[in-house]
Picture (cartoon, rainbow over the protein chains, first blue to last red):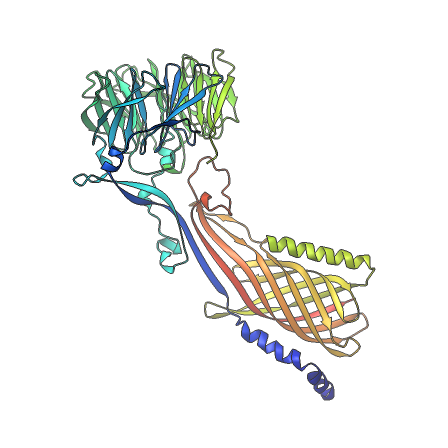
Length: 428
Length: 201
């Protein structure tokens, strides 16, 4: 046996030398390299002069990327592209809308139209455009400093905006926060994608704006006044001379304001905490009539003479909400009464056309109900494949907005929606 | 994944090519431990492996390997191709060597989603395992082996929270855009293997 080993050893010297070398070269210690990446919003300081001095350019038509609010103006559609500008489409024939122009307005969130004048926000300013000829749009007024909550320093004219940024690092000091997870700027994480998927009126709609933070206004017009809501406040502008909007006052509303719906000299404001009803019979000084508080959820509102239809939906940003449609009796606006609630899947915007309620169910499609008897609404149709956020029952067509684009339907026949056209969202 | 497909392809080609030559079947079953260091402490992990292949000639075996390695925190199923060589098969005791190349798969590890929507999962990776030792011939059709080697296993561990996009059905692990935050640990497990085995043919 000894002889054997000696023989083997000398014959295979190379192997025996190599073996420990292999072990030595590669110490048997595990190696871990950690890469952290996270998405955050980096604050960017912007001088107001930089956008005030830059000309607002009317550009050739652009593809829709993430359509926000849609406004119907005669034969034209105005579709906002939050943070970027406004698309103008010729909708003379709803079966084939034509993309005309794009107004480049950085930092815009919403728009409203008042007899040939288009209002849009531009960071801290409100702009008024003459759109009497939508093919030849002119800027006619800039009302400055009316949305001052974006200011970081008003004296030096510096505003703060937030840019989405992906940060990747292998640095150990990224390991802040709990349980070794990277620290996240929760304070800048208010999800605009959710808060802007809101609203529900003829002239208000949701849309994705995965973009800059800061407060984005939502507009509506009533009795020669323009109302703009952001997360906390209602701002009133006198637009009795449409070309000359003037800031009147600011009303504080609490937090989580989402939508505003004007009806019959009243403003119905949907918030994360419930629905406010404001009396706007004195348009310059709206006063609160009531506050219908319910479980915290994201909730667009539509209204007719007797009833308010409120959707509550769950979602990460909507805090433990429920998915329901609430129907309220608002004949006494000082005391709204909940009549009935119906379970839904994930309701977003609503549209009311006579006795028919159209309801956007997010990724669950589009539903329509016969609501002639509010105590027992009847489901009529369900287009499960049409991912939708909001609905506008327009004079020519029912306009449905979703993440995939803007579709129009003929809804003269109430029990059967007939598809006219779809403008798809461009690949970014 | 590239490594996986290459390893699979190579082993399949080899095995089928070998079968075509009508070579005798061979099985090498091994069990033992993987000894390594993690965070300054030692770890000793159970390991089991089986090679199924053909005896190319009296010195060389070749085949498909599949195994089970129980590392702290994850159970890995390595598979790929392996070679076994014997220096003097006619002797009762002979020098013996092996080389395994393949992919360490995480099929046994489940992806978890926490209450706070935090997703965590493992990803497998390259496995290399050279060994050397002795073999002791017992009977004509069975041989015992004792070997020591070095095993390198690449893996990755991910912890992430998907972005808050209501339209996204499933966040893609490969697409960083789908994640609000993501931590990726690229792990290389280095062990000394000590194994006892039997070759049946």
